[in-house]
Amino acid sequence: AKEPVRVLVTGAAGQIGYALVPMIARGVMLGPNQPVILHMLDIPPAAEALNGVKMELVDAAFPLLKGVVATTDVVEACTGVNIAIMVGGFPRKEGMERKDVMSKNVSIYKSQASALEKHAAANCKVLVVANPANTNALILKEFAPSIPEKNITCLTRLDHNRALGQISERLNVQVSDVKNVIIWGNHSSTQYPDVSHATVKTHSGEKPVPELVADDAWLKGEFITIVQQRGAAIIKARKLSSALSAASSACDHIRDWVLGTPEGTWVSMGVYSDGSYNVPAGLIYSFPVTCRHGEWTIVQGLSIDEYSRKKLDLTAEELTEEKALAYSCLS
Ligand code: NAI
Image (cartoon, rainbow, N blue to C red; front, side, top):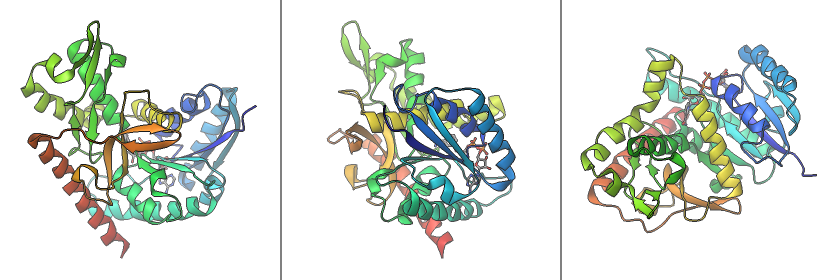
């Protein structure tokens, strides 16, 4: 039998946590043959709710679930984990300055980075979901210098999946037949959802999305805004932010990273920029990547027209500013 993989979920008593832990326990993230031990962390005010989630995990009698650690102790939570999904964070509340929210999250990610660095399993893979996701991941990287930078990523797969969903709705095709959209940049409203290289599987082979949609104004207008603003639209409709789609996309992100992307398909991941596509090195930026043997590689050589170039630069500028703001919170 396979050894269980230890998966940490921080903020596990929250909304995304509640949707995510059963998916992990059912094998959605790591496959139907991989036993798991869940480590769930939250803060003391949520301890009772966290214990309730643990009770429900026991009640669901998941065959793959070999153990549950539910704790408010960061060291206990991080010890021995192979995968860390960082969902916990400080949300922006009404009337709060951006700098104040940043400062709270910088201090959370700084201390959790140290705990992971000291106590996680070697080669632990980290996915930051909590906002500001890219910059939280960057702080985590800075304060966990012994964790290789290729192991620290942030979630833009939800935006990627939203883009696939919109194209599928527009063309009235199965979402599973659409592929290779790209989310560039920040997980924020400056992200650039790009379909220049996306395709749809049809009876007569793979066709480019721009050709099938045949409406450049829609692709450069409404499509982009819908994807960028989808989070806000969900909040408006549900009075709560996206949780099931965020949890499902987090599973997609880890599954593809660990088990590999299908031949000819790429996905979007927030990763440490090496300067590819002239994106400043040293930002956590969403790129198209393929994954193999547990490692991601940025897809190279895609043509970037002038229109796309501006969008790539705009979201990079925002990330550079966020980085500066985060550093100013450190001093
Ligand atoms: P939530 O407020 O329901 O849950 C957050 C949980 O984190 C709470 O239980 C809270 O007690 C906990 N928490 C706070 N500080 C913590 C700490 N220091 N250590 C451990 N746990 C801590 O929020 P929800 O809806 O689950 O969202 C979580 C985060 O994910 C938010 O930051 C949200 O903005 C972000 N998000 C990111 C998405 C993405 O695509 N990257 C998509 C949707 C949400």
